[in-house]
Image (cartoon, rainbow, N blue to C red; front, side, top):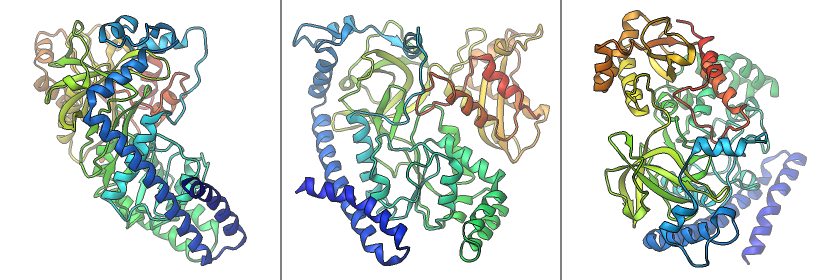
Length: 529
């Protein structure tokens, strides 16, 4: 019976499309409603099955991790070969020594040209994240997943697992297979009844709204040209009017029924989310179905109503270990812990063994344990160890720098921070005989130039946030941070350059500390103040 329903579900979308092309009328609404209902029946069954698996694995977490550990060690997978049944941690540690993500990338790139990573993941973790994310979203916002209520405005999707029939079956606005961002945005703009706005990542959505501001007139003309006369001409006029009222709350003016924004969480997305919340998407909820990195889906989000992302670390594939972090410093000699050993309030670096390369990799992502789901830890991602600044051994971590920058921006009248990047002065050779220092590039809204007084505020905030940095500044070992304002679109150009790299990951983690001169120079060329 289930197979029959699945076959019917697969046949209905192309049938509906064919009929809509031949008979452009509303009499086929029953067919659209039927395929939507069938889609949710199938998705509901699949999600319920995944929920049961998750409940069982989290209720018996130690047993689940042991099974996953056995999977990591079994069979004929090169360095993972062991005697059958030998699944103790010491064997695992001996066969798979810890490596860093940068070392893995270097090893994979030796002697071969890497191709960009796929914008979708495979395996049960990605499937589980997608199914449970859709189910959780529907429970929290029952009306948002009706036919014609969802549109994705970027070529990549926030849902980790790709269902070829999902867009048709759920009646999504976005045209199937479209890769041009402007085409996707036009379709969304011509659908004022949207309730859900999707984008691959928050940074990509930020680029969409910045581009909408810049190209609003051309988009309005394109909408009017689709079918001259009412009602699309009215929509073009309404778009122009909405843009003229400013960026704050723009999304709700364009789509009055909009409820939630869905993006995929990854490293370096916090500032984009904050900018979207404060300006274009003010008043809307944000939801990410998972936290992902180049290694795959690492954590699940089952709580769309939470204002800040809370994630469950699942006990199955990929196999996750925890490396203790104390006061922002990695304990190199520390042994990894299993999920069952996680302590509430403590911080840990994630160590991931995935099914792609069987490498036990330190990701650099640091989480804080904030609760538990059955026996599994619930965490909040806090910062990345690889995104720290150090010109004299002071180690200014990503979260310390970001908090200091946010405090400084609050003191800049009218300014809203969209994005930032920083680097050590040695990258650009800007010391000029002076002490080494931080070079900081910011993209703002509401402020067109920076006074010297405003620039100095960042250095004062850094000294307040870091006693070590303050001491080095007092003795003159470190010079004051230099702040530069870049023009609109500078960080979009940076993201495009990063995505073009052969070894780029998906989702593209946004680096806050640039280590390569050509990327630093890309921002340097776009300085306006």
